[in-house]
Image (cartoon, rainbow, N blue to C red; front, top):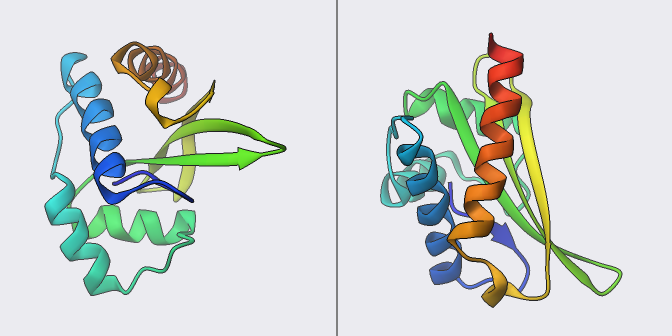
Length: 129
């Protein structure tokens, strides 16, 4: 799914989602669909800006996914943090997550995505196996 956050452009959102998708693919995970299909499904489901874990799981079922990656860029107390979470479609729960502090959106690069995905994959392997 595209990343969400205040002051993040649609282009930045798609770029971040693509960066994370490529990191998961490089680790042997298969992608069910890309952002364009997500947008159509989200529009059909009339998703609002704040998306619940249950709605994300419902979305995952519609696109035939076992897991859905969601991301947020949050501003708290003058600091920016990027969070990525993997939602279990079957259980409608957060299976794994990673957070990284950043100065601004331009700080986000493939190395940060790789570090976060590595943590998520490790957490998932512990929980799934």
